[in-house]
Amino acid sequence: MLGKPRRLALLAEGSFSASDAKTAVGLLRYRPEEVVAVIDSTKAGRTSRSCVGVGGDIPVVANLEAAAAFEADGLVIGVAPQGGTLPSSWRQTVAEALLRGWDIFSGLHQFLADDLELATLAASKGCTIHDVRRSPARRPIASRRAAAVDAMVLLTVGSDCNVGKMTTSLELKQALTAMGLRAKFVATGQTGILIADHGVAVDAVVSDFVAGFTEELVIEAARDADVVIVEGQGALHHPAYSGVTLGLMHGACADAMVLCHAAGRTHLRVSEAGPAPRIKSLSELIRDYERAAGWVQPARVLGVALNTTTLDETEAKRALEHANQLTGLPIVDPVRFNAEPLAQVIARRCEERRRDAGAA
Image (tube, rainbow, N blue to C red; front, side):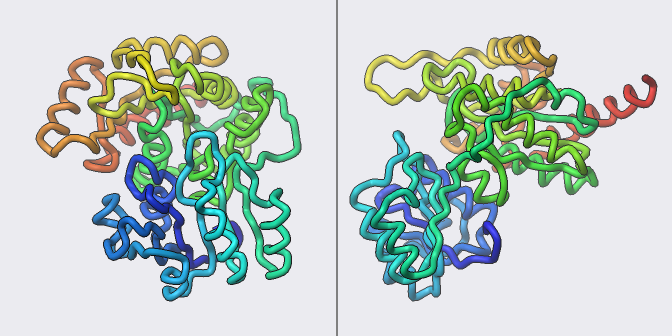
């Protein structure tokens, strides 16, 4: 990870669940070979699989000392709390990790390397604090250059936040690679960056430059790819996070999109108490995403990734069938079942683009 193999402890104190510990769960799913323990005293003694469904027998331990017994050499902040600041109760754990000479990996909006006390500790022990949400100093302006790349560009979009856009992107990458296509994943959030070892956390970028950074990432990835899969963020109709969604859409100039939705979720997740806006129907969401993309670059929604985590298997299959009837599109739960049906549609679209380019 970020330069060399690691033995990581994931800090998720009091929050090690599939809904709260997104960063920890992402690493357990896609880089489990580098994780030796999860720290959460409320679930100590259990396994990662029993808590969040992934990570196999990786142990959950009570504290940093217990994680050190598994020869950990790095600490990851495994939760992305609203507001993006380090919980005050976690500060001592981070300091203790630095005193042991461990590198720190943080996706918080609060940059730990800017904290004088923590930075001084890191310098004294020769270790590094990696603030992966820190954006580059450049200020690129988008100019629709991504529309000209030869690779097919696919963007995952959502009905809401935290519905599985990153996971869908990574599962589609794996499925397309297995089919023989050169698929590249473009990370646009902190967890994706830790998994892929590259990318820009666009929610930490000044709004004028979100599209510009996205454009740069797509152009770079497209140099040796058949399909570039851009990790979506936020949701077009979300009152807080619609801006980052639109910046990604117009910077990526995608040829196609995959809509991600959490089965059973009816209202948008907002931070304040009170009535939350209802989530539009899948058909309305598809219409609105295609319309908004078309302001800069026409893009079709090729299918829907339905997150059925909250349903049992029978209910999940019924939800997939119902969504298919409503939209007429391929509907998959890429984790629970298989991403291949949707990957096949994407592969066919990729081949159509090749034929069209050859005939031009």
